[in-house]
Length: 287
Image (cartoon, rainbow, N blue to C red; front, side):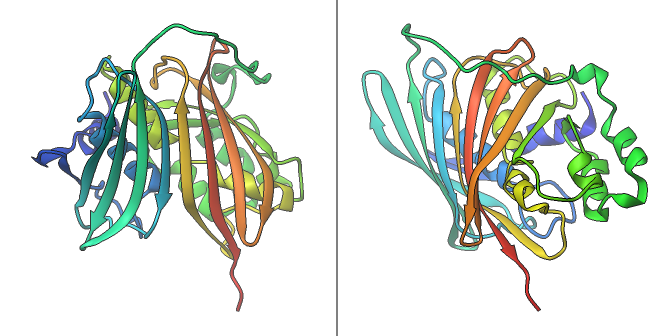
């Protein structure tokens, strides 16, 4: 296991302070604020530790309230809303400097049989046939935004392989759809809860950028102020986050300096394992 993946697992292994009270930390990086996917994943871990493993989470609905301070610990306060015969509900608040920075509700469901169908996976090149991000950056050279090359070149616990980088090489409005393969950068433990937390972490990495494709812009443009506002995640079927997953993203609407994006996450065999929705701030900077 690589050091950076070990660091992610350490970050997701929250410290228990009291019953239903946990503390998490951020990686020692120079980010100006805490990565949203980290807070989503840590809150999911906190909620899951108050529910039996036989009742896994099936949905999460969250709001980002304030930018997190990466230098300060985050306290996660879990409220036990309901323990029913089939469903369990938890509410989690993430607190820093005495103020809530994030709030989410997580629903858990005892596994049972029922009807099953799914949308088919869109066509996409096999991830092993795609060049690495480093090769794509080398191919793009100076035509790629420096913020983009810095983002993809930085060591990270999630390996990304964009299916197509033409939108960055040939700027201009396009159909607001994009695909990226992702997986943990090394093998993970077998615990399904860890794979769900890692996928929750990854689900916030590229989604907001899909809202700007129709406008020929990107969150990497220096005159765009971007931030996740809310985030919803549904787990449909078992998966491994250390195997390739196709993240299909689209954006049905933007307006009022906000962009709405949806995501479907497929295993390599075509199984739909999770769905995501998010609205974010995409404010043009003026002056």
